[in-house]
Length: 112
Image (cartoon, rainbow, N blue to C red):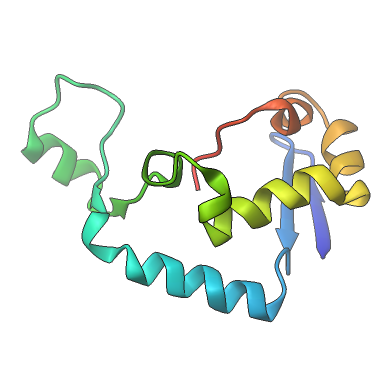
């Protein structure tokens, strides 16, 4: 796992090689298997027309926490949970980072 820190204009942490090659392969296979459950992304407002959304963005999303209420059934969510629970270096870097990054480890919902 490799960390890159950017402080200006806002604090950013870039984490590279966060998962093993085997984990990456299994996570990708999981995503591909759920391809039919992807939906068009929104823009954060319920009042937007479909045309307004498409003018702004055209990607699709899958909210894993909605698909997998039991996080242990998802390779991605299970791997993320173990990262937050067991990887001391990862936890220490997040906790010692500027606000709001330092709060990320205390959440229980991750848009993945």
